[in-house]
Image (tube, rainbow, N blue to C red; front, side, top):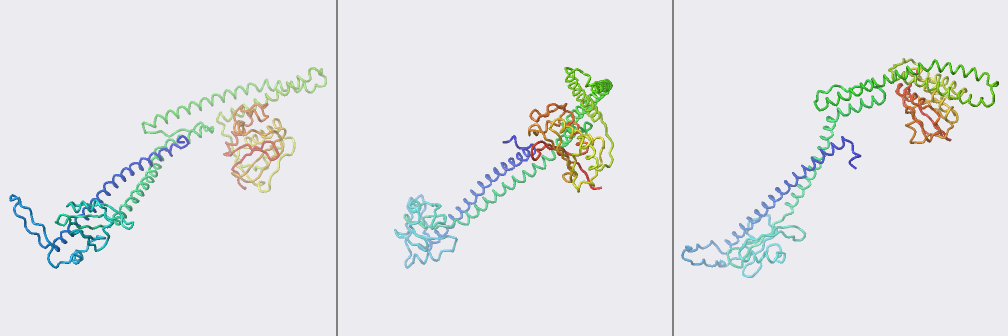
Length: 469
């Protein structure tokens, strides 16, 4: 799965995951520390309030505490007794108001309650407070969380109880939890944004390398990377530029070689073609056993002639021929080139394309049309028609043939040099005509592709940046 993610995506993902991991750890630590602190503070406050109320209740019920004798006399303090005429409920009602949801008193084996029910208190909490300990427990009363606190009030077996609501604390903790989660998500998004920015800056030299490499692959062999002062990238730029320069020199040398060979072959080729024409003019005088070999030889000489012409065309482009541009009416040029190559009228021009013009190299554009039509005539059952209409980049030129079509896996390979589709029925060609077409269309900043013709066969579609004159 990771292999499908682009390099920039991986950098962004790494930054995002790092930010998410750090924010998650920070959120967990913050949650643990703050929640523990808030809970402890709430428990301490509830315990203090209950102890203060218990002391006030003791004072109201038993009066001021009697001082004990010195401890060295080993005499126990007297057990306090209720003051005469004191109402327990009145004393409980006079306690200072707090946030306690309920107050209860266990005195002399009896329960007194202002609010709340003693049955809601856990038995072990009651027993702990009665035995003289300060106890607390988180419980639920009526579906609401409360903190129950019990404190002794001075006499063995008596205790005072309050419970304090925790809904406010729980709401605060819940808000803090959502805030920390939102902060972690926001931090991860910021990390992705920072990762995108960092990847853009870090991969900018790589993007430039990709652009220049693509230009070299498309035949612009003089494309070079700008010099890099970065010690990590400078060596890469110099190595790439050196490789591109070597490739340019090699291609130029190969082009010169192909051109020289082609030029040298033209003279003997013309002699052979003239001789073959002379023999064919006297074909009727030849013995029957010789006529078929002569025809085969004539076909091979014609293929040889086309190969030499194609090699000269290729070597001219590889050698750096820049050509010359002039304004041409596309409809007129296509009509003349296609009809001449087919030997009959095959061109149909849409009315909206009659006035389209293009800054073009007339020789190259004529060669594009002628090669496509000749390819259809010689290797694909004949040319079924050439269309010119407005659309695409400006103008769309289609060349249809009557052949079996070109398999999808061969459609890009037919434009390679000496690349002939094995399943397309085009195995007899020398493999340079369509390569020349692709080079010349690219020279005009256009595109070419192969599709299926409605009704069967192949359709070559050329798009060129034309405009209305």
